[in-house]
Length: 108
Image (cartoon, rainbow, N blue to C red; front, side, top):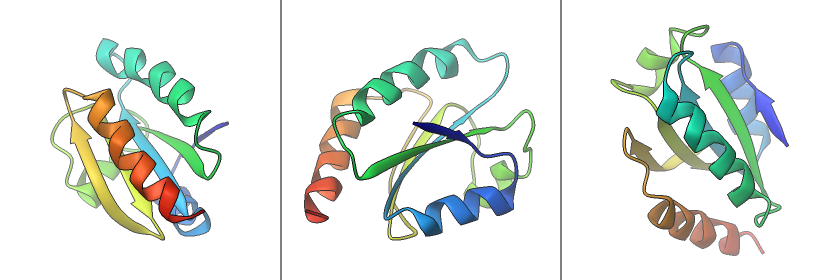
């Protein structure tokens, strides 16, 4: 299930309250962002410990400064509140899944 995060506070609460959190940062008129999101949603169905949060930078502009983001989309994996993996602009889903699997398996 995807959770929309509409503030920095909601973002911080999400990564602190989920052991394994995947964050997708996007913008309104970004076709790549909108194409990657369903791929992430499908991928995360195979990883029950991972929770997906989506931040729309068009609505939460300060997320760029919080995460040092210069382009979108950006997909991040947080383990126990700490950023462990980041991909931006061109998302390599195989590499992303490999990193996610390693972290997911560490929680079993």
